[in-house]
Amino acid sequence: MSDFNLKAATQEYATRLGDDAVVLGHRLSEWTSNGPFLEEDIALSNVALDYIGRARMYYTYAAELAGNGKTEDDFAYTRDMREYRNLLIHELPRGDFAYTMVRQLLVDVFNTYYLPELAKSADSTLAGIAQKAIKETRYHLRRSHEWTLRLGDGTEASHQRMQRALESLWGYTHELFDADPLELQLADAGIGVHNAALRPTWLAQVSAILTEATLTVPKDDWAVRGGRVGYHTENLGHLLNDMQFLHRAYPGCQW
Amino acid sequence: MMTPEQNFMRKIEAEEKIEPKDWMPEAYRQNLIRQISQHAHSEVIGMQPEGNWITRAPSLRRKAVLLSKVQDEGGHGLYLYSATETLGVKRADLIAAMQSGEAKYASIFNYPTQTWADIGAIGWLVDGAAIVNQISLQRTSYGPYSRAMIRICKEESFHQRQGYELMIALAHGSPAQKAMAQDALNRFYWPALMMFGPHDAESAHSAKSMTWKIKRETNDDLRQKFIDQTVPQIEFLGLVHPDQDLKWNAERGHYDSGEIDWKEFYNVINGNGHCNRQRVEHHIRAHEEGAWVRDAMTAYNAKQRAKTTEQRQAA
Image 1 (tube, rainbow over the protein chains, first blue to last red):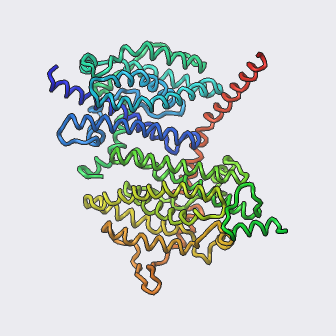
Image 2: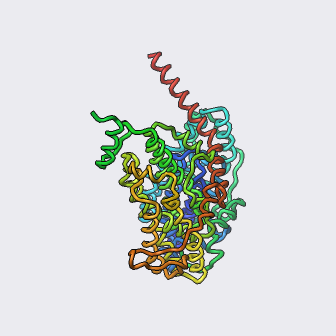
Image 3: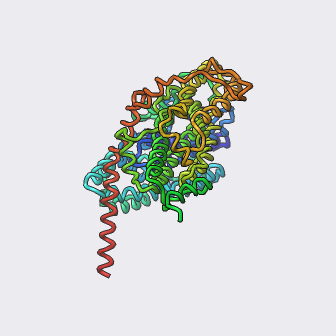
């Protein structure tokens, strides 16, 4: 790849990672004032804040690489659904507390392996963002791990909710380990990460936690994909409608 | 020998703090439980009107600021529930009293947040009014409440600056943004004044609270401070003051102001404002939706304890 392409690809990659973070942060922020008790309400808002913080760092870097005067907010607020490149698992509705926690477990374990790889990136900005995010993810995983145990091995009702959430989310996990030519080239260039290689360790850890929580690891017999090419679930349009409301109603204003 | 009551009053007069294990008149305890739990409920219910804009905040920075602010309020709710628990009550019972309508929370949160500017107006005016009251409460006679107020005031002043900064951005923005700011000011100014409560003569709990130094300044004095400090802030924004009767009184050294609509005040206090029902129903819904989570936690903890006991017995 020529230098120019590498820069454009890195910008695209940072945008994708920003999209993942902003969308999941948005979903988590929907819990504020809706948590099962006050301490947990506060903790979920905190995790949401971490993701919003990540989105800002990735987008700011994408904007810097674009070099056309764009800001983090142009990325978040002025692109429509088909331009968003987040993985689908992040945009699914918040669901009940079991659904939220299962999604967090699946994503947190993924990030536990993904971020240390990104922290080795030849791109020092991406490496720096990953380095900061690793610490947050360790805390996120401690939480989602503990909640999985409590809810999986709590009451019959909580166990059922967890298993149901797991079954309905599992097919969206495959996309976490996909890579299109752009991501493969970036990984080969030492900037991105070879995601596919992370699946065995991810699966081993997730399975161990689920088993400990008396839950059953779902069958790998379905997968839904499309986030990285902008082929989204119906949920993202509504999420953006909400998030981008002021920019759509009052175009061109500063806030 | 002093009676416990005389000793209590001696401490109050000497500005010594009353601590949880100290003897206190039952009415003092009940008065504090009412006031501190009401304050805790206000923090928690206040998360709703502001939470209403978290997903629609117009920049990532504003979204992060608003999320942290609402999260801080949850944290204030926690300290204040803990402070109330030092008086021998349980948080679960306090929450039940709020959900049944027996315990109140600040009426200001029964107003809807209709536009983004309302988030600025709440930070600036509502937190601003709360700070005037809370600065005074830092000197309250009950130790745990006083310490909670000192901690909370620091965060509240930060929130107030952020709210005002949001208003500046709107007031210096497009004509539509400026109109949005003016509209929010018009809607929130009067309810903010009402936050200080009825006139001193009509205030049900004031006299006793002043004697016991739970309250340190009267409703009307605190309200006057707020009115005075807000005038230059409105001028700086270039907005029109919502009180057309506002006039500087050189003799008093304060602004004279128009009368508050007390009918509206009592209507909202009595549960008939725009959002009274919505706020309580929201709280009950979240609480009920979380019941299975709390049950699972209890069940899991019980299982873990049983396991530990079994292991100990086996060893």
